[in-house]
Amino acid sequence: MHQTQIAGGHRLGFQTLEEERSLDAVPVEGALPAWLAGSLLRNGPAKFEAGERGYRHWFDGLAMLHRFTFSGGAVSYANRFLQSRAYRAAREQGAIVYSEFATDPCRSLFKRAASAFSPPAFGDNANVNITRLGDEFLAMTETPIPVVFDPQTLQTVGVGEPAPGQLTVAHPHRSPKTGELVSYATHFGPYTTYRVYAQRSRGARRTIAKLPVSRPAYMHSFAITERYVVLVEFPLVVVPTAIPLSGRPFIENYHWRPQRGTRFRVIELETGKLRGTYEGEPFFAFHHVNAFEQGGELVIDLCAYEDAEIVRGLYLEHLRQEHPALPDPELRRYRLRLDGTSVECEPLADVGLELPRIDYGRCNGRPYRYVYGVGQRDGADFLDQLVKVDIERGESSVWSEPGTYPGEPVFVPEPDGADEDTGVLLSVVLDAAARSSFLLVLNAGDLHELARARVPHHIPFGFHGQFATEL
Image (cartoon, rainbow, N blue to C red; front, top):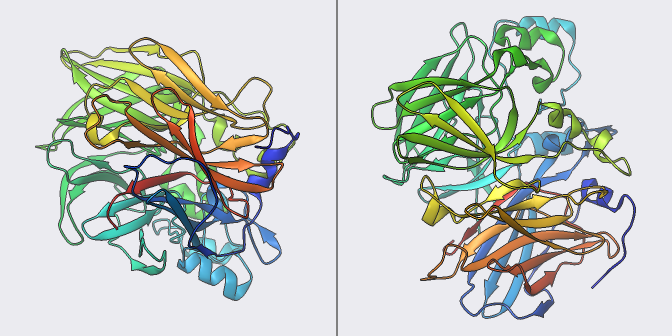
């Protein structure tokens, strides 16, 4: 184990990885549980420049898929760039061709004016998350075109069915009752709408609701319960017609308007009816943790920020500083009285937590006890610890190791496990001193290390992934 703390060591996580590899076996330290079989599929940016020009934001880098497969106590590994149009164009032309979250191609005023009355158009650099729709594995981002890939080879197969709008989320949910994949998209136009929809497979989509909105909010995720979808409209909003002519990248058209407060739009899953709009204090969040109904209330847990400064904090110019100062997220609970209009808020832990994961199969849309995520110790230069919070007791525990930077912890339940935290956590960890990464396997109950499997290169900081038992 490497115990060296390197100031600014996190910066390696924002450097390009060019190599694509397929390794039948990687070294394993420790012992993996005998029951652990399947593949961890990860997604995230791995190339941060095209030609001589660099992408500007963490969310903009070109997507790479990673696969760790567990079988009989051994681990294999592969990685591959997603062959999106954005990636191919950048390689072939040596330039940024498609618009990204905070990076635009160089366009003339004439070209901007020509598209002034058209909805915004984006590429397919699906670098945020992975999901499964029917028999297809999809790489996703906030643009409407998912990319289909082969989970065994990581080869790009084609594109999936576009979302019904120009901006969507890479965090769809499974309906707790029907198992359908539920999501929403913002459809920009003369009459902008939020469109909530569900589907089981390609071509089998049904619209749940269309909600008109004049100033759509930037919402990276949403909440779901057994009966409701909840869109939490933070006061980071945009005038849709201003986007094409502004000359600014997409997210820079959004403005923080705290006087609007935060609006919780509650939509009935079965009928699509707007159950109500509830207004609360201004705040911002990327990630919801979970939501459920309890005693006439909707309970919504998320990782909250006081404002939207975190968006600017994730520009690469800032992240590559030796000690980037990032706002600390608060694990927070909001309660909505369904028979009234009140919104109540309470903190759930005294430790910051992001990239949250739960035992999704057991607890999605239902009461739960444990949440796992990443956090940052006081004085650390970047996210450097894994965190587990016991919601019922308000207690937290952590795993950390000097000089290392863990990513999102994916919970894998032990088959027939009796308790909600019976299983393991899988996290891809950057080891700055070794200039490489390893997959960490922790006991989810007490966060003690079971094993680690090291790859011979660094893996840039990614975002999200899924564990699949059948590919």
